[in-house]
Length: 265
Image (tube, rainbow, N blue to C red; front, side, top):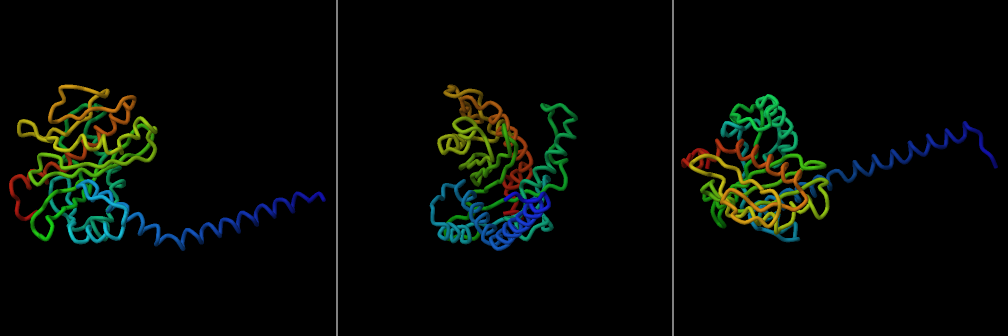
């Protein structure tokens, strides 16, 4: 039986409203559970940077509660209390990356290789997660720094754990939204991330962010370099840019820790 155009249009509109309403309801109902899962996954990545891994989310949450203390600082290394979120864990690193990216681009004036004073970046909030020694509330085993950037196809991010000397990397974990499988996506593989362990971010007394080399299987790698990923030049460039930007932004805070700034410990 052939239906009129009015019937077809009305049926389509009704189905759109019904299905749209169902999807909206499901989203609202599941939002709290989704937020909880996102928070747990973030804590899992933070702990992974210091080598704490596992699939038991509740056990990881308990370790996080027991051993992680968190603060937020600005690009001048000053601790801030008004950072636009309930807690350091709730600070949107992605949103702050967009603020940082615009200001850094403006400071460089179109010259991507230009050297700039990162302390001139304003209104950027930088969370820091302190991994405390087991059983201690005052001794820090590692400082975990969130980093964010852009790879070949989409956003990339990570957590870089620094040893208490704030000169060497204890561990690193990286994630991505859409890098090429088998190529740039290898940035989240353990064998690539482990290359950062023990690497130095200081050279001749100055900040020198660890950079990934071009190509793979390199020899003569320095303390400030890691071997590259074959066929992933643009992802590598994004990863290096992310490390340069964020380790420079965190540098004023790290300098204070190196100088035993008791007030910030």
